[in-house]
Length: 230
Image 1: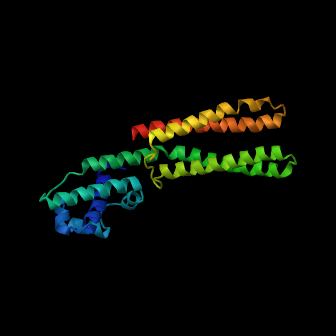
Image 2: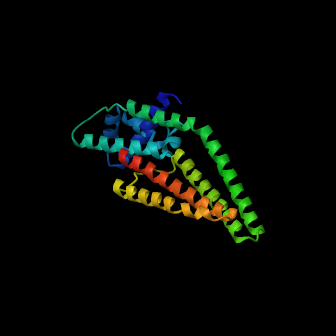
Image 3: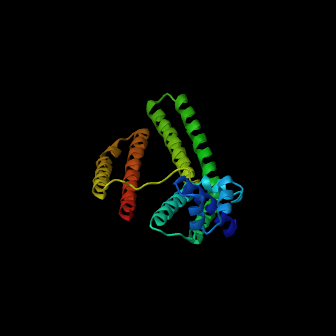
């Protein structure tokens, strides 16, 4: 997609946002450096190209367009008549589209992994129905539950890459996260004595708990890093 086509599509989206915010066609034309006739064509969909709808479906692009529309309206209220250059905005949009295109192969990998996780969950669930030992059944049920959770997480990642899901801040204080990390670490230490149990199935169950606690600890520490960056 060329920059000129992206510029045209962004102009179309901006024109609609500005008119929706109460600006006249003439005011919108002055801010965008266009003629009123050109703005009318953008509003009617006769101009802007086939990429307008594609950009309108991308939450990240629309968030940028809407924020720029707000800035344009404020500028108009302060007496700015335009035109306001939107080339840099178009370049940012182009970068978003390029990232989305480069992630297409990754999305196929994720979709395949989701399929495998779902198959594993189904197989483990079937095994849990076959065994009579309740401890072994518990292990198979855990594998099934973990695989389903993995598929759910991967689906959310897929939605994020496709612009269908927004990622907000952590919203939990660093001190709270540190307390949670300390609790997870303490639980890992307290489980060590349980490995004295001789039954291998029991040891497998204990191992599953310890691995979960270790994972929880690492997840919380990663969240702490994200919280500091925010």
